[in-house]
Image (cartoon, rainbow, N blue to C red; front, side, top):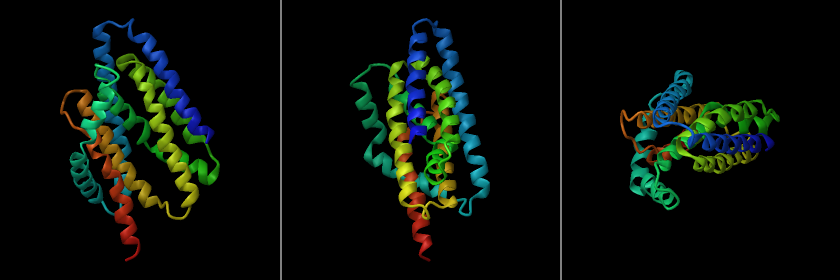
Length: 225
């Protein structure tokens, strides 16, 4: 799992560098960085969705996933509970920044395929590449939101570590279709996060996280029919 460790370490390093730059930036540059993050999230989200959606055999599944997952997440108040926990440690807008960071770190194609490829083929190319990209992303996020962005490294480590272990245990069960559907849902969430950062539309993206549980359930049921 050294690829995942490298990826998490790059997030921490980038967050530290960014936080050191934060106090030296004038407000107008903070605004520009926020806009850069929002635009990047929108572009990454669109890029993550387009190819998997073209390859999907169930093109409406992501709509069902978002509808059901969003309803469940809202009932569980995931976004509100997350914001409450973050606010215990800071009075800033870190919760919005950290939510965006987690989505960018965890739900890109490299972050999903990387640990699986490492587990099945001992190929760490995706993870090393993703770590380098996350270093740059973390510098920008750290300069905007501060050192608290480093908490994203812990989330990423758990996420990629879980995928790595799951890939080892379920070598034959992790189908290309499942990974494809997960990337579609993840890409939509990244896009939604970008809309929020740009203040185009405030969307409680974390309430939609349960949507990621719907594709495995649906594809698992269809597998028996």
